[in-house]
Image 1: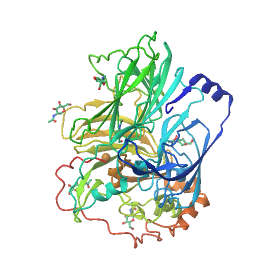
Image 2 (image 1 turned 45 degrees about the vertical axis):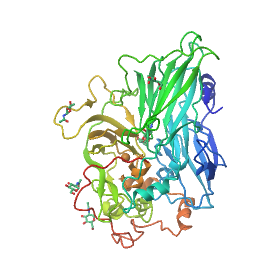
Image 3 (image 1 turned 90 degrees about the vertical axis):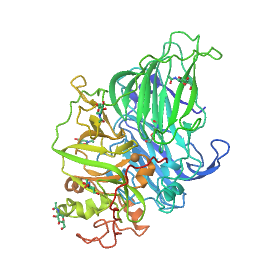
Length: 550
Ligand SMILES: *[C@@H]1O[C@H](CO)[C@@H](O)[C@H](O)[C@H]1NC(C)=O
Ligand SMILES: *[C@@H]1O[C@H](CO)[C@@H](O)[C@H](O)[C@H]1NC(C)=O
Ligand SMILES: *[C@@H]1O[C@H](CO)[C@@H](O)[C@H](O)[C@H]1NC(C)=O
Ligand SMILES: *[C@@H]1O[C@H](CO)[C@@H](O)[C@H](O)[C@H]1NC(C)=O
Ligand SMILES: *[C@@H]1O[C@H](CO)[C@@H](O)[C@H](O)[C@H]1NC(C)=O
Ligand SMILES: *[C@@H]1O[C@H](CO)[C@@H](O)[C@H](O)[C@H]1NC(C)=O
Ligand SMILES: [Cu+2]
């Protein structure tokens, strides 16, 4: 069936014996017709004629060799969400950031190391194809897992819409239409299917359940009433076990939990998954949508009625303690960022970070960083006014202070790094931060996607130890499409000495008449002619960005 279960012991044995392998994956990316709920047939994107796309499994140190043939009518590219691409920045995937998209009818082979272990995903990073189904889990196992468990389950959660993303983005940016377009109330998919898979438990065994939120827009809550979950991993970083009753996950986020089965098989249980958007009106049976799945100990055993714990405890990423034991990083430079929406003189509402709305340059930013002489490449101007380039010095310790004076949460994702979560707090409030890394948590968690709560700030730290061009963006595809993104240009001086873009990648650009050298406009020096004039913000702010779905 569609539940991915593996016996951990066999995997461990194999892992211990085998040396690094090449994991070969062949994807013919094309359109498929799908009807997920019986009354909304639509075109979606699948692989080798099928949807859902089978998950990819690897062991740390393996080389992932992913050949993509593009059978779509537009360009495509694939990002391995959560891998660091250390030394292979050009394989990261985002179109016009680190590569030109693969043109229709052409093939390209990604090849890179599965550089750390955890729960990740592969997804399209061109034209928001992620939202239309181009996404699947990527599980990288540790050669020797730090925790013992008997078996593992993989559960990917997705929101699924009755229309294609491009239509929604077009309506959202159309100043003659109401903003935002009416809520669309997606359905949930579980491992790519509309029904919940059965989890089979054997008495006394311990299970690792990997839960991935591959949503476009909506949040998921997950709980196993009647069982205790212990979080051991978030976004590819192991934590000390943390007992929780529920997971509340933003788009892009992942957790692993350990669950020990009850000693007898006298009862079966339910697990709960709720798809919701806190920023969309509550509508009975539509938002939230409640789903239940079966935890089956023995076929036909009665279901144990769920009892809510007295003090239901949600996972809290600032309270998790990294298993690595690494203390908080020092700070060389603080970068303050404010995310939100803004009205432009075109009548459009677009998203901004520090008042800049992201737009793709004429050549991939990485190719500017590599082709320009070091003094030029260190100057943010050459990346153009709308890539929102921020140049980082090699090995600098960075603290991001991200303010979100917004009425909806944003799941912000950083490529190429995992950041430490130092602090959260309310904005415009001089009282103590609500949640802060404390002396009890002597090792803050690192993750690559953080949900910034409404009207709050967060402090995140990382070290600029991975030369490359890395996107920082909201993982709600609609916000990314509306411009909530910026580009870190990390140590271009070191990058150009260490990395050479394979010719097969430059060929992807040439095939589409895109230059591979020069500034954001593909010109020498500071000459940016050819880039569109950035839109001008209207003289008044959007009072509060209204709720928006998809
Ligand atoms: C998944 O992530 C999306 C966007 O990042 C978020 O809107 C949604 O609530 C998340 N769902 C779950 C189940 O965590
Ligand atoms: C699980 O879902 C059921 C049915 O929707 C609900 O009655 C119950 O309160 C939920 N339990 C938890 C712990 O969320
Ligand atoms: C953005 O523009 C507003 C004026 O519209 C200004 O008050 C604010 O300081 C600007 N923010 C940044 C980070 O430049
Ligand atoms: C970058 O280049 C511009 C244009 O020549 C110049 O005005 C600016 O001072 C430079 N910035 C830095 C940090 O050197
Ligand atoms: C400030 O934050 C505290 C929680 O830390 C909260 O109790 C209080 O209501 C907040 N005050 C305002 C004005 O938002
Ligand atoms: C990248 O590799 C270098 C050299 O091995 C290492 O020092 C650095 O910590 C790595 N960075 C990341 C983000 O993995
Ligand atoms: Cu957002």
